[in-house]
Image (cartoon, rainbow, N blue to C red; front, side, top):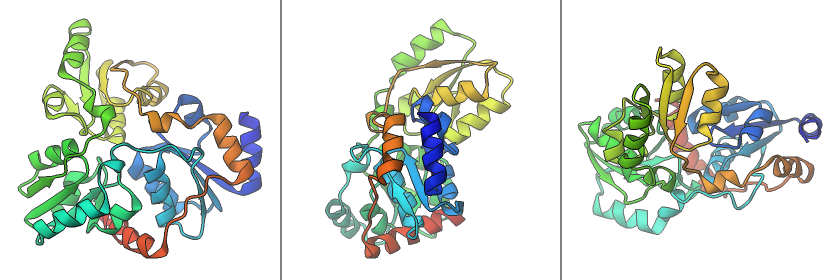
Length: 294
């Protein structure tokens, strides 16, 4: 299967991007593995004609927004994000009318249509920096309430939260973390800012997946309790074979839909191609471009 994918990749002049929540075997065949910000930057820089995005819908949309001249493929058309589905343009526009002087900051875990209605985008890696860079006192943070509350803790801005959440992180509880800590008292607790406030407040370190990767790589600590999607531990183990990781067993169902077989079929059939209306693409690109230069 891997050999067939490599041949098809050369034939199509394709590049494979895989999120760190992806299955291990899919990460292994990718040209680049990273979080959404890392992969957004890789998508811009690639000279490939075809981008196969092993992630979920909003990630592939982001690549298509930034690369209109390239073919962007999502190997499973049903690989969606529950968080991104928690806000619609109609709902957002109602909120914008209630707060006309607020800047709209949309987490990249949102649809192209939501990005098009935003002033700027952010990722979990740069959300605090993005919000603090704005010349506005009031910010509408869309759609993750947990990441938004984390940003509010690190900012003097008036951050108005949308009531959305990522179930992968919402399902992580302090009881799970404390139970693991009792079993492994020397392990450090590292969690994603999408986790609930109570979970973040028992952590030794809070950061995006790329930030957690760097933290683990630079740390002298040998054991870690990891509060994010379970497949991320595959990347941590690969990069840090001398360290031990304890996970809370929470999975992203959408991203888990993608398999090696589906990657192969995507390259064979050039499916499923991501299409975005040009008017929406241009507006969304403006919000993404502002994020990429902060």
